[in-house]
Image 1 (cartoon, helix red, strand yellow):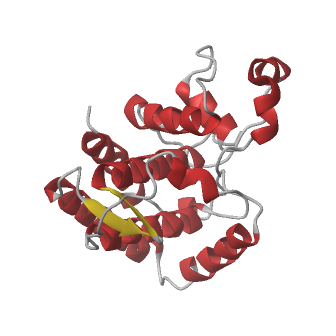
Image 2 (cartoon, rainbow, N blue to C red):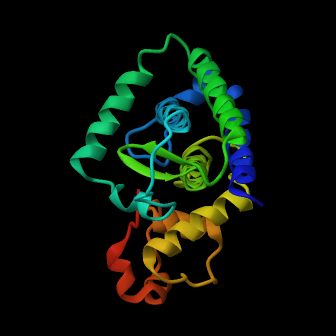
Length: 225
C-alpha cells in the first residue's frame, strides 16, 4: 500500500467521523490535554491547510528533511506547543456551529486528497521551512491523522473521546515506522501498533514490563507529541 493510499484511508475515516459530529459530541474531551473534540478538529484542519500550501509550493533540491526527521522538532511541553494549544482553542471558538467547522474540515481534507493524488511522489515541496518529497510529506499527513484519530476516539485516554472505530492498521503501521525511525531501532513486536503509537507519542505511560523492554530508550519518550 502506497503512502497515497494510506492518506486516502486515514483522511477518509476522519472525514466520516467529523461529518456526522453532533454539537454535544464536539464538547467531549480528547486525548490531547486541554482540547475538546472541536478543538482537535480545528487543529487537524490547520494540518490540512498546511498540506494544501505545501502541495502548492514546489521547492528546489536538495531535500533537508524526510518522513522521520520531520518529527524531531515536535515535542510536547515546549513554549511552541503551549502557544499552539491556546491558539487552537481561540480559533475553534470562532465558529458559529460545529457543522460549519465540520464542513470546512471535510472540504479541506477532500481537496488535499485531490492534490496529493495528482502530485508525483518524488517531487520536492516546502513545508514549515523545510524541503521534502511529496511522498515524505504524505507520510507526515498520515501520521498526524492517525495519531489524532486515536485522540478522538474512546480509549485514547480511558473514558474520553468519541464512541467511534479507531484508525485502521495501515496508518497505524506508518506511525510505528516513524517511531522506530526516531528511536533508531525496532521496538519490541510484542506491542501492537496502536499501543506503540500511544506510548511513543506520550499518550500512555509504559508499564514496568514495557519500560524494561525499552531499557534506556524510555528516557527519550515521547519521541514526538
